[in-house]
Every structure is written in structure tokens, then in C-alpha cells.
Amino acid sequence: MRKSSYLCSRKFTSAFLGFLSPWCWIVVFPALAAILGAPSYLWAASRWQRFGVATLFSVLFSVILFSMGEINIIQTALMIIVGFVSDDVRQLVGNKSEQGALFAYPILSLGVIAWLMKLWTDSEWYYRGAAEEIGIDYAEGLKTLSSIWALLLVIALTLAVSYYTIKILFCRYNIKCKNDNRK
Image 1 (tube, rainbow, N blue to C red):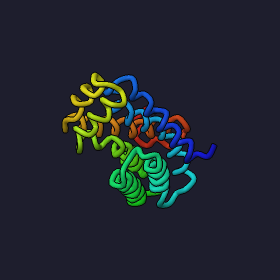
Image 2 (cartoon, rainbow, N blue to C red; image 1 turned 180 degrees about the horizontal axis):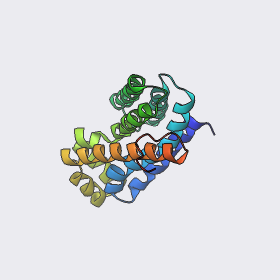
Image 3 (spheres, rainbow, N blue to C red; image 1 turned 90 degrees about the vertical axis):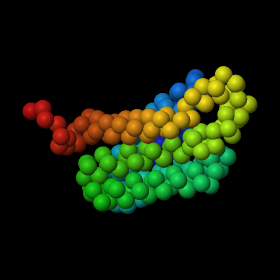
Image 4 (tube, one colour; image 1 turned 30 degrees about the vertical axis):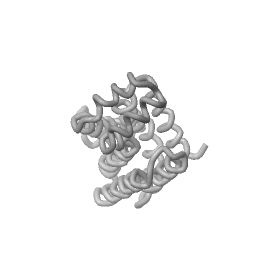
């Protein structure tokens, strides 16, 4: 299986946790997707050290979601924009540097939140769909997560998890860890 399709399948796999509870769907899923997507991103970024890795991943993922009817054109555009911005940051910081990936990957990880964005932009639609698909209790749980505070929590958690996952991978594969103070 190609690395880019492997990345998409890992993100889809983590989405199935959402059936366990609304918290797993809204809070745990983006963070877990960031963890599972990091090795594929790091593999591709280490081999393709110029602009386009994150954009390619975000285009592939958003096109698959769009073709399945999971997201609309605005969400698709947001995912692609996030990928482009991630590549832009990596290019500004340094395509061949550890810091480039450390700052770019967390931005790319935020793209998956576009899949969930209707919870905050059209809560009633999201509630009705969840009630119909999974049940009223689940939908009520989603209502508690439709606040701006929940969105900020998801963003902060996804950024932190993705940054530290990339950092751990750099250290694990003996890539130079500049901020490691242990001697």
C-alpha cells in the first residue's frame, strides 16, 4: 500500500472511535488522527524536501471525503488551504530542517477538524444527523461539545499531540534532536 493511501486509511480507522461516544468523535479523533498520520507525513517529508507534501496529503484526504459525501466544498477547500499553509510554514522555516516539520505538521493536523466543523457552524443540522444516525443520547452529548470552548480544546489538543508526536518520532529514529538537554 502506498504511504499516502496508508495515511488516509489510518485517519479513517481513527474516525471509527467516534461510535463509542461524542467525546471520542470530537476530541479524541483529531488527536488520534494526528498521531497515526505523523509517521506517514514524516516519511514523505523526509524524502520530498520541497513544497507540496502537506498539500498533496490534504488534497488526497479531502477528495476522498468529498467523493464519499462526508464533507462539502467549503470543508474540502479548508482542508486543502490548511495543507497549503502547512507547506508554506515548512518552506519558510526550512524544508530540510527538523524545525520545518515540527511546525508544519501540527498545522496539517488541524485540517481534519474541517471534517467536524459543522458541529460549530451548523449545530442543529449536526444534531439532527447524529440523532438520526446514532441516537438521541449521542446527539445530546454532541450538543455539549458544540461550544467555542470545545473547539478551542480540540484545536489545542490536536496541536500539542501532533507536535510532540513528530518530536518523539524524530528522537526515536535518531534524527538530530536539538532541544534534547540530556547528555
